Amino acid sequence: MPETIQISAVIPTYNREKTIARAIDSALAQEYPASEIIVVDDGSKDNTRKIVESYGERVRYVYQENRGVSGARNRGVNEAKHEWIAFLDSDDYWLSHHLGHMANAIEATRGEAALYFCDIKRAPDEGGHYHWDHCGFKISSPFEIRHDAGEWALMRTQPMMFQSSVISRTVYLEIGGLPKDLRTREDTLLFF
Image (cartoon, helix red, strand yellow):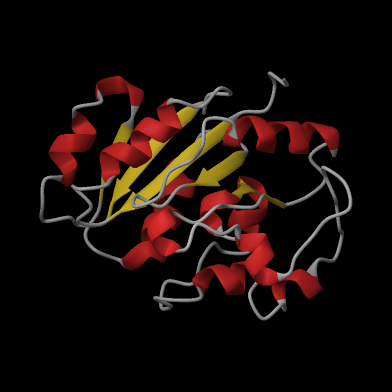
């Protein structure tokens, strides 16, 4: 496994006291550990702060007035210290090999892509299916690099999802991050 790929995990959250610990625990349980874990609390009014702060120095807690998920993700990227950003929604979780697979893909392609993504499996209460099967998306090898993946972004259901992606911090900042005025489909615009 590569040891030079440093990944900052960014977890935006808002009133997720019931799920934030599961998300953080999954980030901490990675076989290839994140170099840092940043939770951006987007103005929660519940016990989110108390739960996150219980992790001590293992997790950096950043609070901001409510700006929406785009504002929280943008803040997390600005706070991050490393080139690769892995987003994790606070109501989702990663399997223990997720960041290792991402680091292997980055190393195998010499970091040439701005965005790396993998498949996700939906929870049983969401049907338990794999997202790529639902999209009708396949790749022909363990890692596939495209210099223009516009056709993937234009699929009826796109295969990229933030919670299964690792994004170049440099490129994210160059394109201006996520638009602050969009509350949905902000990820689709970024992928374009």
